[in-house]
Length: 318
Length: 269
Image 1 (cartoon, rainbow over the protein chains, first blue to last red):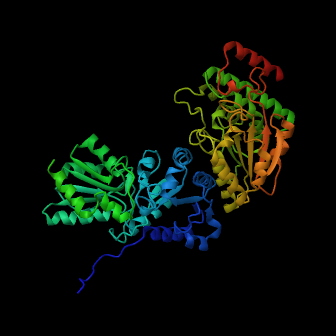
Image 2 (tube, one colour):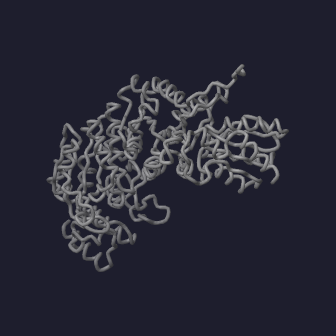
Image 3 (cartoon, helix red, strand yellow):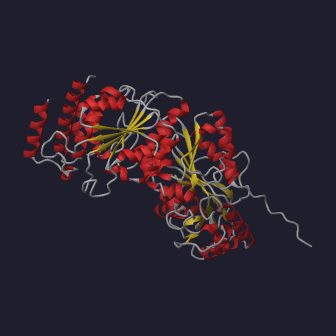
């Protein structure tokens, strides 16, 4: 007899992005969506049928796409520039620097299918450098929501924020973690679980794995605090310093290289303010083998049990 | 402003630019001399701009994509009333807002930051597309260098402009035939530009870009497609020993050279 399943329902955050953008566009006629032949993968089909004139498809041309976004903002439009994250960020990084960040253009960059979402397609399509590339740029909040609720809240926040930002979304299903009425605050971590022995910090698709790891640790008698750190820049320094001082050890996990991403950002705050032992989980500076996103995250030591094991090992260094 | 007045203004701008580069000890004087006639015609005849209200939504948009010739733009903006004229003497000085490439958040009248090549035209396409979306009547102009047209991003933007039907966009290529290190012909000779732009669906005009009588009608021309003006110019125009010499891309005149150039430009006044 099969055991009853109680696995939570998984949601593709792109659906929340698209639904929110369509809702906002009804009220705000300046909103336009800009994409690079990515109507389908950016889930802009609904937007296109409702607002055909306001869907600007530049074709397969990411550098032009980002520049066009800056020009649309100059002309009083509110562009959401959408594309697969490895190409949006990597291929047009200098445009993001000069035209968006340095010019402080009111453009919302939306990196779709980030991290290992295109697992089987290989390292050219993995976007595990985008935190590092974008978080070094001034004027550019870098945000990776953890579920559909936070995605919708962040997309709505971005529309009201007078300046550029980078929203990093996945296409891998994640369960709901935050309450339905959650209001996104840029630069603020959410405490998902209280704990005094160690702190687990993640964002994006890794947050729910961190929550599971904390549950496993609880079974082992270890009280783990869990912080959802959607904003990588500006990072919530107060929450990190408090975590270091109050729990004495920090584990980070991310769908990104361990160089330059969330773990690095947390480590910078820790080393400057409250040095404690840390473990950064992520892609360890190599190109990944073939496999699905879920397989690769497990492969790189980010299965919930492996995260819990890493936390236990770290506790010995306290 | 009439043609003869524009010619006089352009000479005054050349003189002030020469002095600014000489005093700052740096600048891109060759490309500045080639583009100044185009800038003078734009700011003193063609562009609808509001120096007292630089962000007026009805303003025409202008993007200097060849941002390394910022000094010429600063002199023009000052003469047009966007900046105090005496501020030009701070060019490249510590904490001056007039750095080597224009900054839109510091310098009134600058629409977007430029410097790295191949950025201005995509942004200008976005500006022109925004006007189409909102029904705004402004026109968008952008000046690139001819060497700059080697950047692939420009060709992405050229395709998009045609696809979007941007009859409210004018691209001016400052075709002085020299880039930083060598002549265009000896580097990656993308000339002739006309057939390439036409093949991509643009209307193309070819003019002498240092002749005001040809510049003004070309800038004022309205077409049913995006319009490219291939402006044949001379690097170092107006200064005999600089003219068409690649080494004047960013060389600074010696005192003796400065005085010769000053005399030549003053004579033309």
